[in-house]
Length: 211
Image (cartoon, rainbow, N blue to C red; front, side, top):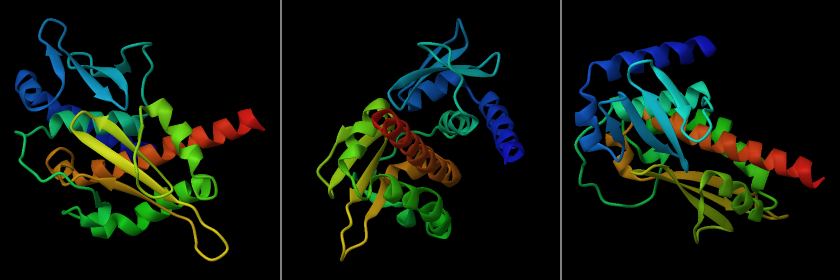
């Protein structure tokens, strides 16, 4: 798995190097400094430096290097940059995204959605607590829901419905249709998986602290 991630990481750096960084900054809500050859990218409530010259990515506040899957998503976001599209704003599931969303959904459900159900299906309000670290804002869906700004142009919505003796708990991750113009489908899936994983880890950590 690490090898696959590394191949994708190197590929997106190569793709990015073929592009005009200043043009990328006209398409996306990022800043680029020609003096330092660095992008500043907002990713889940934190600013990251993407150094075009040294091929390094790190958090601006403390120099933290993100997990490789997060780095790949940031690189794809930059390398996939296109002119803004006029797309209706609404929430859709991964199954409704073109270019393979339906095909990949079963694995996504198994790897990410079921993990959210396990972490929050019996205590949905914990989702609101765990979401705060990622800049999540409470929404009005289900028993608990939160909207996250993965990137300034890319929101995600996590919804949890609690279960009881008669109804099974459930959860979902929703996207806006515009994501198809902003990320490759595999990175869109990876983004949802990354968010679910971070929330599960927050839930596990808070449980240990509270126990």
